[in-house]
Length: 95
Image (tube, rainbow, N blue to C red; front, top):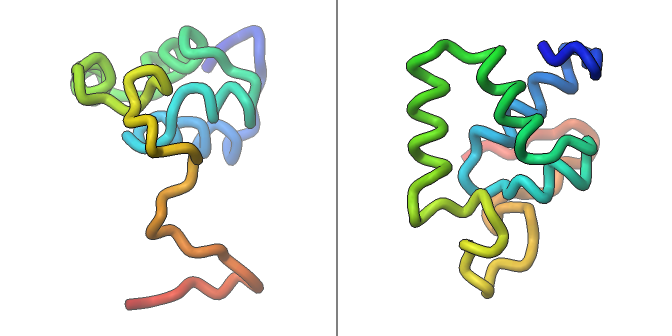
């Protein structure tokens, strides 16, 4: 874990989940948690297995990555997936 910022396990898990998702840009993590891209990379390196980290970095650095707003399709203007439903009353919709 990053020494300068002690994180609760729930927050750490959420940051890793957001970083792992292709549709969530680094700017969303910065906005929500205050972690710039370099800090997210350090966090991922220290909390993932080496093979998982390398796979994630390769995917993030690819030309088709959506992890950076500048590389993203300009038609996508929000952080949330279009298929994601709002969760209300802790009821999770099932297909």
